[in-house]
Length: 158
Image (tube, rainbow, N blue to C red; front, side, top):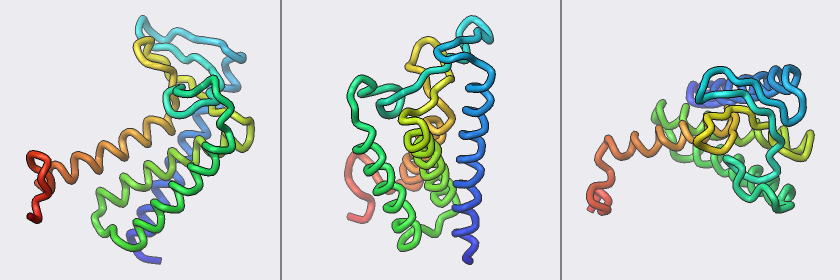
């Protein structure tokens, strides 16, 4: 197995483990829809999110669509890694995104919703999987922005 595959799968595994373990701990500690204030602007609030990232589309029954889209995106990320990616930062970023997708996918398949619990009171309640996805996308964005691939909306290779 190539080093980039090891890096990718280790990142995915650790991401899924941290996400699922944190949800297990919080779900075991808090009752359904329970909340524990940690400090003024942060609490642990257990909710089941049937929507997508950060609770969007929570009232729609989109479970099967989300599961199918998650699987397609996860496979697409792996195929993209297989074909194009050699950069360690991008490999790790893709692993974070893949881990976040798989973490939330496990919840959807297992209980029909995603367990969210991180509550800063100024943003919808979310979980580590959501954070991993956002961090992974941010790493990719800043990586390409830093390398000067895109300046003033014009690709650098022109």
